[in-house]
Image (cartoon, rainbow, N blue to C red; front, side):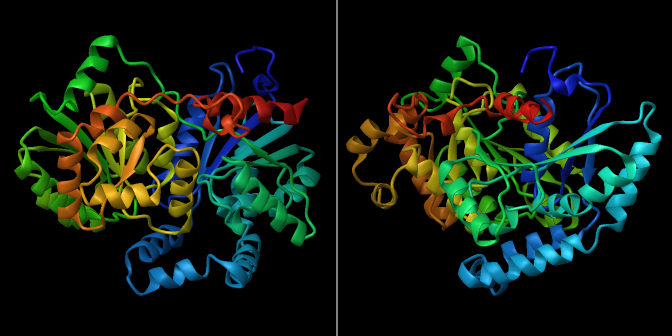
Length: 441
């Protein structure tokens, strides 16, 4: 997408990114696509949902032990169809605020746009955009294209947006499921598979000196400080887990140095207070989601990070980069929250980027060290036990046994005959804009 003749360079085109503040994932994907645009494209606008209930519900369903199983139940079968229909109706019936926002944006432009490209990274605004799309085109004589980027490898039916011009998904499996659902709904929205969009800010090569330092960090025979980053989700899931894990792991070895990136919000204050004075923890906070993302990228630019402890959210797709990249570290996944995180792990297993369930169970018992070391050069990540003490013990064992040293040398090289190898392309942002450009030709 480096050609200056790209339709996206058209001065009469207004690009709008529509996202919602439910966790950091949707904003991270928006940020990745934003930074992948050509430099001479008209500055896009970021349009965030004003509905704060999305954040509240996301946190409630993630943390509440009673509501969480219920929320997972309604994500399946007939229950999903019923709740999807209700949610879609509610979203499409509340569009006055969004419509007026768009009218204001259009009227304030120095050059009135003749075309609008809306890229939605959350289904909420995507459904609302689709509901007002035809009305806006008719009343303002504007051609509007709506592109929906699915932010997990999960075929939640709510991601199927009627009247969208394109839905972009990370895998053929998710495409097949959404296409099947669309047929049931008597709808035919175009769906394409494109490798997950990783921010160009994260996908930069390390110098040979820093690559060597990264290798040294996971060398069991050396005493090089081992840097670990822990991004805390927008819902502040797992904070007690992280406190216990860091404390116990540092007791096992003072090589471990932690970089915690979190939002400064009421529900993280207690967590922040607990770790602020720990000498082996570096804390990075921000009041706004965008600042949290900036802090996360800053940590990787200022330090050579060997391990990242994270939920299997959209962060899972950093596995598409090998560890020679600046922001690619060995991924240690905590307990999945919600169907989409289980689906993300399934994506990684299908591509052999993490151990199988059987292999994982054996590893958690600290068994089969020699076999694991031989297999680990294909792995970009590994799952942690749900108990934080057991997780700390497992991390320490994986370091001492040489498993991390083997994983650090993993190279993403899909087999030439693999029909799904296109799902592993680390240049998903570039190909996304190439695909979207085709909507205007």
